[in-house]
Figure 1: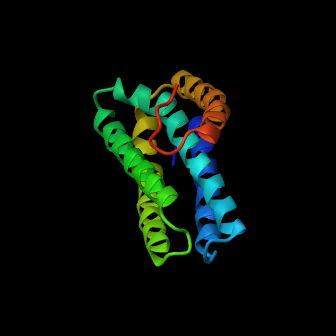
Figure 2: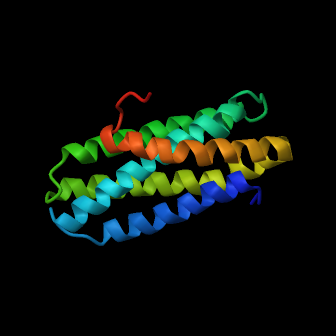
Figure 3: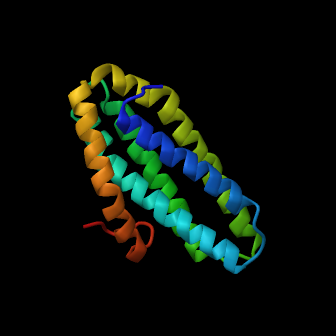
Length: 160
């Protein structure tokens, strides 16, 4: 995988998400633990997706050779956001919640594996070192702001 800071930042988030998904998958019923872990994961995924779209994806959309990958990933972000919205609405004690969570986890893990194995290396071949550095700065600036927004915004809500 590419080793530029932007890709390292994104991979670090992905590793955190993998651990959070694992931990949440081990919870049972409508408990304070499950509620807290889910809320933390929801905010983290929403913030990560928005910051990634505003940095890496925005740049990739401007590059004809990377545009299709960026569009595909934006579509997958919307799919994950839709899953999160459904999970917010479901009873956490019901089997339907766990089933929907497992579907979302599978789709998200597929998405980040695809990014790391295919999209990031393709972007690294096309983007200059200067562009990669700028993308890291944008991501690192946007992520905390997006976390603050996710505090107040349910999945699918409009962003500022």
